[in-house]
Image: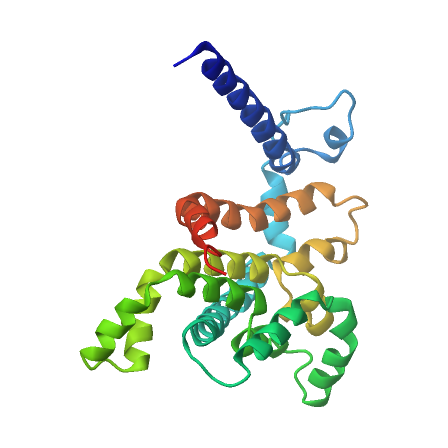
Length: 279
């Protein structure tokens, strides 16, 4: 190893460590603030470690806010969103990658074009449509659309399926395997990295979604954790500042995605790297 190479590695590690610390700082501030009193949140110079540690922030939060109810609602939305996205994206991606039918490329181009349409443009007409069929005020506007198509994930899985050699399908077809069997027993297991990325992205969207639940979920008993954080003040009318409770509920909301990423980061990175190798 040359001296220049060694210096380059040291510089790289320094940049990564500094960048990592900068990324961790907001999360650390969130967690530490959730254990502080209101007075200590606004002191200067900044108090990096809570003194005293106020565990009551969490106990009082659970006493006054239906955290378990909001968690259950969030899990329901996240579960069905993930299942719907995996089902529609895998079937669509396989069809666009392997099946030959008239207008395939045109339909795929239209599908990708929908990604460029911002949600603000479709928000009102989609709301009117759901209102007319009586879905507003239920979970249906949040859990049914993923079963009908997920453009970004469909594109990603299409790209991954195109990297799998056709020889595998030809050999299976010679052995008498049907198209559904080839898809279920050959293509899906090989697409595990891309499916992992899709799963993580879907879970994060369902867990962190705020705007769409805010639009469609009118009743308090249907609210998610994100809506609970936003509306914390209504549960504590006698508390002038609920920042420490908001930080506590935000910590509860942030921890599952962080744990999920650390558990699946290897598969996530592998899926990102391998997707899109073939155009």
